[in-house]
Length: 465
Image (cartoon, rainbow, N blue to C red; front, side, top):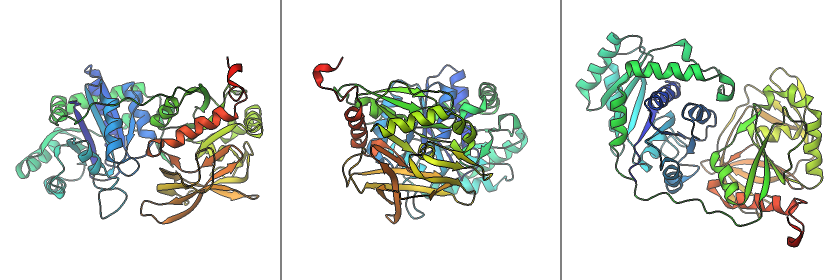
């Protein structure tokens, strides 16, 4: 499998990796290429923009969450029919789960995929110093191939020529172009990252990015760099499909709940799930489903609308009280508490399954990789089951009663980080976003629980229609 591919990495955070990635994705698509996007790391927001540009689901790849074998499997399946794959990095090229090793870094992922790297540098305030920077990054890890450099935030061609001459005089790394600063392509930022593609109104933005790239980036050279990689060692293997009875899973999908790993949803489907989307913001009734999946997102930004939809809140609470299976992550967990208190201090009533309030606190960022071990049997599996995930939130729980937890947490270094996974009956709600590929048995257990607790599916086999 050849799979032309290129990793777009930054020297550090905030150099404009996402802007550059979107510009290249848009320009390649405008050329008629079938482009498959990927995102290094656990981020949900950048992949949403990738998908809006390309029309294809962007996949998360992560050395710490998934490891080399799973990264290669996920990549191979998604890239199989693409002309070119573009992988957007995370943070700086060598930044990962530790300051002393490469685990979880973009550099590690590039080596796992045997992919060349295009290094993005903010060139706005430098000239010859760019050569020192490129030289350092190119030689820091001899096993990594930094094949090209692209400068961001360079205002004119004269400045770009200085940068290009400096780098090419001191290194063998190709300089493939630059992007000019342009307020028209700015994507707004907020407390969890960029504004989502669902909110941005993106058609004009992506078209402008494509034009910028076409004007100042050598797209032929970009494609040549992607084709310079060697073939992957194995053909993609399909995900095995369950032969069990179909379980209809209601997946919350709107501006408040929009963070899902595509692989999580597909692993549920592989276990026999049929996914049915609904909106806790807009819909008055639940669809005809056997279980619910409430993903992360921004309930704190839509607290008044969620609180005002009393019919949906009551329907979800009644579903749980009847013994229905509900799995929730981060924003979904917040929605299942008694209330969400937003940054302005305003409390919005929520579903009320758990005796706690989720309180937003700007200084209260919780961020990091997590190993999750079940400390009791629950809908995610038997006690002792281990999976990996990621926490990223500004809220914290303020209990108003007794809370029961299903999971023990450790960080990337193995240090204990307390408990997670509120549990009540057949409901489990975590702050941690789990990646089911790290423990596929969790997807199987969830679907099995939905099949077991559904009145429609728990009937005798002879009564199933």
